Image 1 (tube, rainbow, N blue to C red):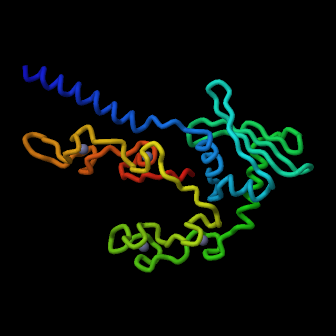
Image 2 (image 1 turned 90 degrees about the horizontal axis):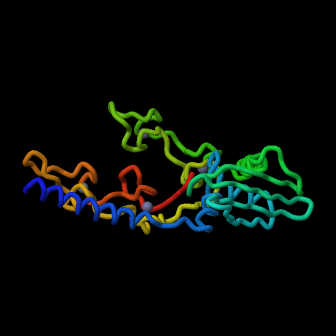
Length: 238
Ligand SMILES: [Zn+2]
Ligand SMILES: [Zn+2]
Ligand SMILES: [Zn+2]
Ligand SMILES: [Zn+2]
């Protein structure tokens, strides 16, 4: 009887918890979202959007579908110096180059034009504050070693240096594409922790212990923006 009740409770519990987890994750990535993915993708710190919009005039971004495939289109320029770029999305956050035309001519390597634009952008927008390094000074607390007093340096987090504030560590001056995560409405969580039911503690061998699955937060973190277990609530792409 007790066993059956436990099974029933578990079943009920598991059903409700998967339902709430799904409800928070069922956001559908829109055309605008795919365009954000394409523009915000950084290569060596430079977003593809910044590079292409700097290299060409009249740049336009759009999304098209073919069956279940989603394609991103970027086109623009001026007559005599125009381009057309096609990528295929392999997930919400990644894509592959499919084709590229330059002045109406098919390019052998579909990513060449983008790579050249990225390189040109990196050269012309190098951060002056850090000379393109992405960091300014070596950490004084650890003299740049990342270790102080036998453990990871608390002042710099173990990197041995301070991120350049002017370029946010990228070494180039770029737009910030950080945005609220739509999968969790910017909360960083996808509902109550199913293990402890939000009570923060679990009963183990007669002892109340801090829930190991949510480490005492009482919630499940959003698998899209906060897979590391720390609720972030924003998407930065990379
Ligand atoms: Zn340090
Ligand atoms: Zn900098
Ligand atoms: Zn928990
Ligand atoms: Zn999220």
